[in-house]
View 1 (cartoon, rainbow, N blue to C red):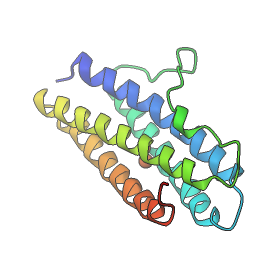
View 2: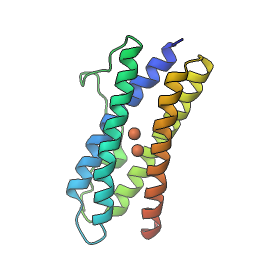
View 3: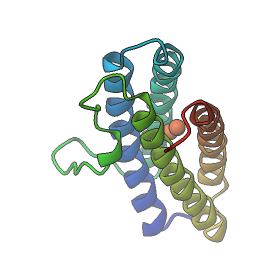
View 4: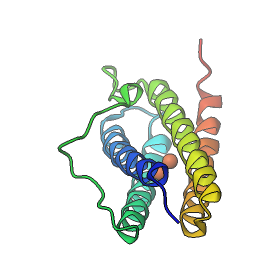
Length: 151
Ligand SMILES: [Fe+2]
Ligand SMILES: [Fe+2]
């Protein structure tokens, strides 16, 4: 059984994933310098994974006889992930990624909880699958953060 809470969370997560795709792609393109290469490669790989998350969420909405949204109602929220003015400021991008991954983890935990309550195991499975990817992304960027201690 589905609930409004589930479809709202699926829709919110879908939009967030697409904003993440845009910001990771942009930062993978703009960063400069010797410290940037690994972070850029990692962002590039994550773009594909975040896009796949959006695809899974959109397909789940379709199965629930809903439609994922187009861009008309889109409101940006990832202020921490805007490309830095100083394109060698890899640290600010790392901090922005960690913030985005934390937000995503919270959303998928909520989705998992709502799906469990509603006895919707298919949505639960989607939530757990994506949650495990987001936790892996967070771990990877925590590793990068260790090389760029905040001052
Ligand atoms: Fe994602
Ligand atoms: Fe992620």
